[in-house]
Image 1 (cartoon, helix red, strand yellow):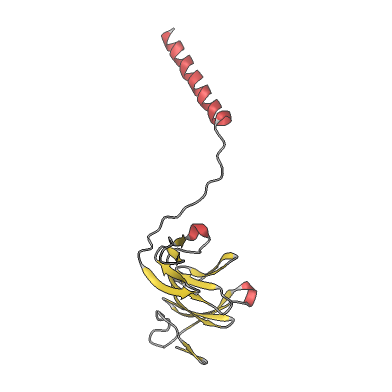
Image 2 (cartoon, rainbow, N blue to C red; image 1 turned 90 degrees about the horizontal axis):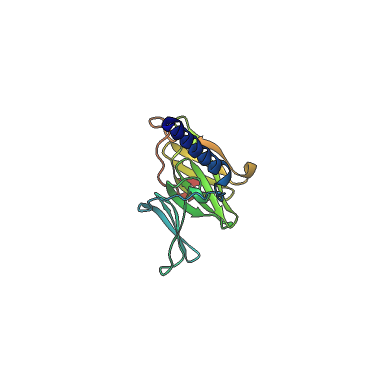
Length: 181
């Protein structure tokens, strides 16, 4: 009798657990992702309309004023990556952010990301210069040209610089007249 009673209690307990799991479990709302990153490495800071924007090792940080708390945007907010290197604002007021794996635009409508890769995998984009409808983008593997208007935004080409090191790391870009430095 003892063994049969023990098995009956185990079966009853198992039935209750299964019933609660299937029918009695509370319904949970959809989860929201949070990304906790370290923004301690500031790679580029720009002041735009009395607000400071920073491209960091942990996302984009916006400092509205010295007295206000900063806002941090990460990949969970729609930013393509948290490993950022440069940020600029073009003539239309759109912020362009480059980092590991691509280029991202930021406007009041939110983020749009444009992936970039080379033969070794995702590009690490390091610098941006605005040239009207196009952006010149420096990477660890050379210079890239991005169109803001073609097909809603796309990378057009990759340029080599010299014969000895055809695709060198491009840390900064200057446009002077029709010359790119």
